Length: 370
Image (tube, rainbow, N blue to C red):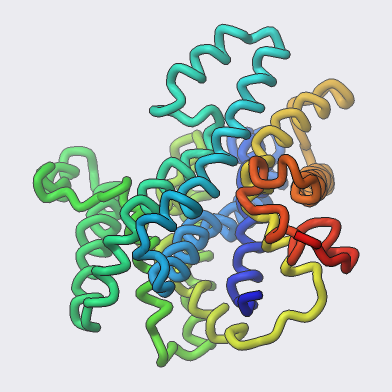
């Protein structure tokens, strides 16, 4: 069994919970009826914003540091299917759910657009991740041959021409936007600009001398403050929710995500795993990501049916709703990982792999005979 990465396990679990919270809080952030809840949601949504960038970064750091990544046979035999098969499985479940709710036309429309549009908005992440996996063998060969100066140059291109121009463009008056809009032939927004986070993870993984922890905490605090106050000001000013400070392609999110990644590396790298809970939660994080949109959708309908309101209206209600959704998704993922015939389809892991860390057999200490 490979040695686990304690820092990545912690980041993966925190990011998993962060993604769930972002979608639980989405309704509250677009409502003006509960000011206290809005401000609470705004703070924790800003804190959770790095969740998706961190998932990209960990994928890049792990894939581009492993020699097997250059193997094309491994790519199509294991790497791509472990993402694509669960994505198709959950997409089919959501389409079937639409049919059960007497929305056969919507299900048919969703199926016909599956190659172009995810059946659930949060699945866009996988539509971006799969292309990164497809080109990862070439990226691996490239990364192995890059000097430090070439790495610095490549990341600078992304930061300046993708994140920098995007950030500036969103803040200047409309009549000046064209000044900061590059010609399409100069556009380096490969895979929507998210490939940069994939490469950023591999880039930061190479760092041996890290900034001080105090400096990293200061960056995190500063970027979180800017995001929270900026989002509040922008939203109240426009009378509609604004993600100008929390978009994944802003310099604010980039700095916040990079600082969190490096802080985890500084504080947690090299620590040994103790107990079974963290590896279990980390192991089911992908399945939880796939389950949570359906769980939130059903949960919101049940909430409306029981309480006759559109959603939680107080901080305790939202926290309770979040806890129930998160717990349900985790339990569902663990159960699905414990069933040999369907484990791979719903988790992307073989049953034998799940038995080593993230199903009931692993939790109860039973060894797989596979």
